[in-house]
Image (tube, rainbow, N blue to C red):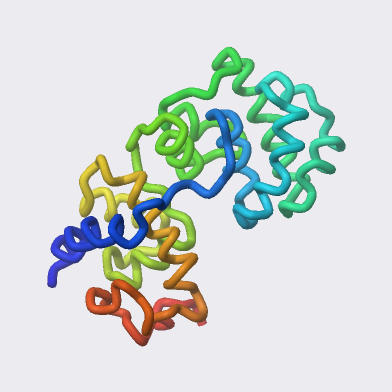
Length: 217
């Protein structure tokens, strides 16, 4: 089976397995998703969702993020880890939105990627989930791991993995593809103890029963 053939089957099977797959960060608008995504670095979505209600209430606008004292913001986001850097990035992001975009979250990957604390992955998350724009594929640790195990790529660099996935799947599926793979990575194809026996993709996976071949020693 070629890589393209496997991708075509995955495009049909994954939405059948995960018909409700979606972004698991809680948000009500693009700004909230942008902040939540910055906080999600090296942190679980569950923990971020515990922190953001108080944060979103305290800072409902970009102006509020630009103005909040560093120490207060650090306290609000402390439990997400790397809280000093995250607080600095979020304050810088708020200031950049005010200075460059009149306080409004932009809708291009170039402008989003240029915001403090953001990057291409964060930009893809916001574009795909807040604006429903399929500009690229979000490549997090789950997507990167599954892309290797399913032999959709031979790369480990997220940018190169994204380009390989873009070449294999139609543009209208790019945002959903990230959700499908992330949900499968969290529920079946975990890093250390994947459930190969119970996996719905068992008959399709080149790495079945030997998923550790791509793990770093």
